[in-house]
Length: 325
Ligand code: TYM
Image (cartoon, rainbow, N blue to C red; front, top):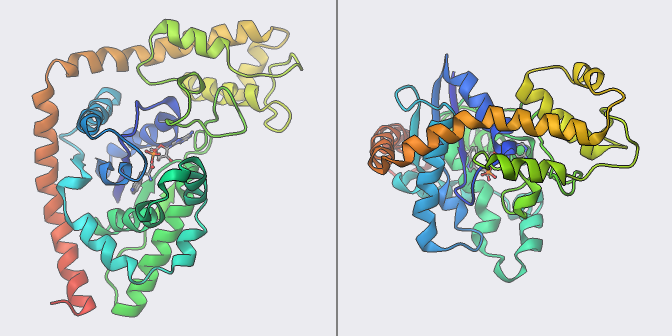
């Protein structure tokens, strides 16, 4: 099976990115052909500092390595190093109705958030995403649930292209974690945890023990005083239980029992200690990797070489099918 997924270098990655996406990748890496890459072209659609982008891209590579992605097993590359992404995005945009793009929830959200910068790239974002996936003839795309609408559009575009120009693309399927597909914000637990919100609303994968304790202690809960999984009435506690369950690899029912008759403070302390323990190896490994920035650049260079070969092969097929060769 060919597995393909990527992350935008927009900020430090958080436990939502890990539980929704990277944790699935680590499992899939064992028995599949995997490509895990960095979506730097997508990151240009929201305001950013040019000087920061390169640094953030290398940080995402370091994060992949620190969490267990193995460059010997999986291809790791940077989107802008493979020009076929932009080329295919243009070609696919010619068969994508504008109405489909205007309907995308992310486009609506981001246009709302960045009113002064509603650029065409923001609208075309899902077409570039379809190009990413289809270039590598991927079968499965492990992502969080927030990307589902984009994956469905990529499927629609692939089917439409195959029908119009002949079988060219594999129609990919999204893969969503059962419990971790949507980790919520610590501050507003009815909203997803997001890299672009205030740092208090997420736990970064490299937060210090003190930061973890502070953020978990101040996470929004409720006044019901019972550690029970009830996302409707107790979205904050339900979110913390989900995070606990995934990191401890323990059923929510068992955790509820463990904390029955105990207060939120005790539960939060338990969760903070668990996170400190589970994230420590990531922090240690990242520190080690940071000593060798050349390694990260080498990985990207090698990865780009491998990725280009696959992408070029698909582009040849596409151009032939569309009458460009
Ligand atoms: P990005 O960078 O926003 O997020 C990276 C991955 O993390 C998942 N994720 C979450 N999962 C659970 N709970 C959360 N709170 C949470 N927040 C984020 C995302 O679903 C994603 O899997 N558009 C993509 C990048 C991309 C891509 C692609 C992915 C571009 N082209 C092609 C797959 C295939 C994005 O913005 O992810």
